[in-house]
Length: 384
Image (cartoon, rainbow, N blue to C red):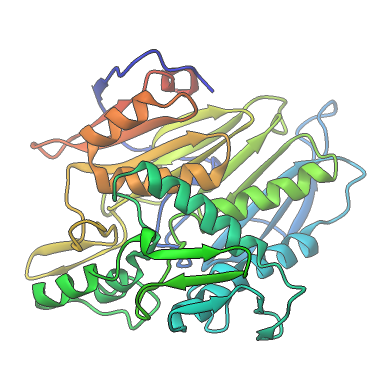
């Protein structure tokens, strides 16, 4: 990762959307729901070579977390890993998906003040031997990001997400905003109000109505876990994508760095239109944006990014942000936090970090778009 030398902002007018060809698009949508993501269509597992000297690469595809995943990996002797990948993602979902009523996170959300982390979502019963490692790792990472972000990132925002109609409850438009209701729901927000008693394997919350939502990091975590599965099998070259969140390692089938397209953040833009292309190697990237998941009531737009500080849907000139990091769960969480922070705060924060880079797309008053990015981004921009 590039070592940032200081907070330097670079702005330029964006180019018009370009056809994305076969590049996987980074596209943030509400977790567990499909918005369009550009995928290389084909059989569930195919083997291909680009020329006589290239390695053989497999492409595995499937569905998870309400969207699609795609994995490309090298190795002529490799077997079809789709079954192992599907099984891994199924277990992760059973621990972190709020859309599965008997998942670990759903059971915690429905609990009173205390919840035993020996709950086994596979059997829907207590099991001292079951570790809930995926839930715990998401919990730990979320807490680490929360501690850095001064309230701009908070997975206990779930009651507010449901209120605005973007959660696991009934999907509906809020025709008339109830500020009194929002004020009451904000009292349920605050990751510091949840205590993990590791000795007792107990998760305790101050109020029974508090709920967790890992949609800001779960896809990134799933990407990391699939990448770890591949690495443990000795696979050196791969690209793993879930709903646009991506990890790449080694080289692509042409023996080059992986090319990942950042979607054009414009309502009505085609799913094969992109803003720019990132040339990546041994890194993760995730994107968050406000421009596809939203609804309108009497001309007012309500987007799915909810501020834990105000309780309202976030409104700013920031259309999307892509974050590069060593792992995808970190990139995923930061991307969501930056959308809540807005450009100036997010740029100031990101520029001080030595282990991430960020690429922001901004709406200008005249309706055009501009970009701003941290100092290390230009080395990844394929179209500059």
